[in-house]
Length: 411
Image 1 (cartoon, rainbow, N blue to C red):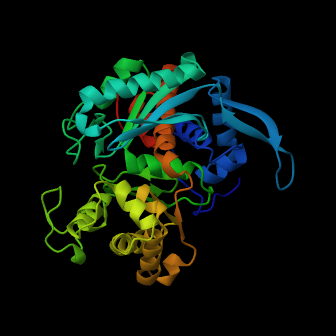
Image 2 (image 1 turned 45 degrees about the vertical axis):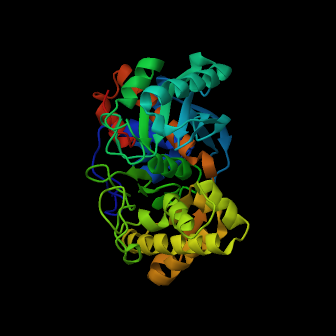
């Protein structure tokens, strides 16, 4: 009998949970062979083969072609069954929404941006958003639409599908966003925080060895999503990554939208930069104006952007030292400015232990403005797969499957 080393020994898990993890890894593009699945999950090849075989029989996974290997027989390539299926997803910002069709593996098609004002409230915003999403899905074939994903710039309770105590989102608090979309589309729906969606989307296109990462979105506000051991980490109450309200010395007594003073958001966010530059006499009314001035090397704007990057880097350093991730990814409109990125990177190298930064990747998000759309679509496809598993009797309660896929909301 082959002895399993303590390093590779893992707790036994239910077949439905393992099947869900296999679907997740194949859907996200992190694994495309049985050998890769066995390595990532720490499971015996025979167990993986049995699970994959069952999923192939149910047409949830297909095996085709071959890929090169390091020796022995060529490996068959795994993909989701019915690759013509897709999700429609949107990343809703303060004054616009970016919408696209997300394919299994993280592919993106037919991306468009439409003007929407989130402050108009859900009753006005959601119908307009849904109309555009439906039109976009119809171009590819509505009969192949498998799920709907929405990324929102506020705290989301994934169990209820509601935004909870958001700032700058009047009328959205506790509005049943997921239920509204499910009734409109009649399909599995995933509603998530924008930073979490960006973390999920970026993780799907990064090297598989990057199992721990922090994605930071820096727009009008600041948020972060955490990937731990290849999965989105939510924390005990779903608030993991909420660095925006960490108090820092440089913020002094500036009031924050949370009701307290001295938060990171008050000195490092896009909204803070607009306020700071207007107080200094600059003609700015939006974060886009700040970016335009900094891109033109305006001294006041460039200096303010650098200081914002310093503040963010100071807060991130404590988190990076504690978490020791493989990578820190920067997204959002401020990440397009090199002085901001350079200031963050400089603070991390200065403030973190050398062992932590020795192999640390610090980069802009590879997906750029599309990271949130891809992540929301990935969540939606995972929800669809969870429903498919339950429908064929392979998974028991939906929560048992969706928990392993990083989505805890029940239907």
